Image 1 (tube, rainbow, N blue to C red):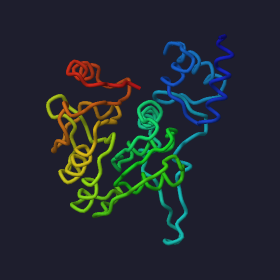
Image 2: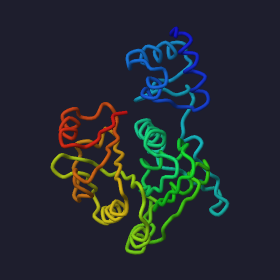
Image 3: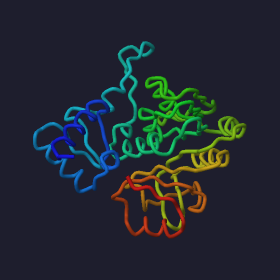
Image 4: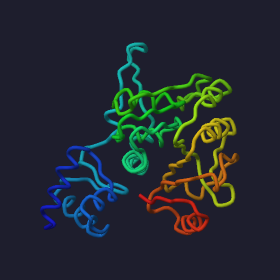
Amino acid sequence: MLPLDRQNQVLQWLHQTGFLTNYEIAKRFNVSQMTVWRDIRALEEQGLVKRIHGGLSLPDWKLGDEQILDSTVHGDNIFRFPAGLSDPRRLALGKYVAMEIIKQGDNLILEGGSTVACIIPYLEAPEVTAITNGLFTLTLAQMYNTVQTILCCGGVLNQPNAIFIGPQAENFFLSYRVDMAIVSAYGLTLNQGLVDPTPIYDSMKRVMCRCANKRVVMLDSTKIGKTALSRVMGLSEIDILVTNHDADPKIISALIERGIDVRLI
């Protein structure tokens, strides 16, 4: 295929989605990352796309712009989604997990943070059931209508994260067994594993992971190597780690040597 033809197809595809990752383009057209980079540069020089970390978008596209809802309860106040839902790093991870890991008929636990919530807009697999403790995740699922069945626990609502925690929430999850738990955290180190700064959040995530046959961790590359007070799970408990391609290469190599399935996006 001629470069101009491929670039035109990329542009048409981009207008349908608003955002594409380098990985997606390389896979679809069976070309190298260098070829993708040259195509993006050519389109950017014409002002047709905006290059962002790990991919490209339309010049004026921003997922967060679509995620503001008027409130009829609080007068002039508006409901805003967290900034993480417009972070290109996290969007790239969400898109990959939605399109490459989640399959038809999967039963999922989706931890309620913004990184995992980035899956929702890109989910295409049919007959998916999702269980979450996140109000942002729940609202996105209603907006995008990509999840056939979604369940949300009760419990103590933590603000401003808009997630349910506490014994009631944990007991809710313990009554289910799912194919996959998808979680994120503050950081990951070779010595501690997956870590968070607050033990009460960690307890919730540990329960989620105990209820799943497989555990998928989504961490943007800035979190690889970060340490924190409390451990969520050890490295041996992680089945798949999805992170960005610019994550610390020494840590990534060590994780692979330990048998972790690392997906670099």
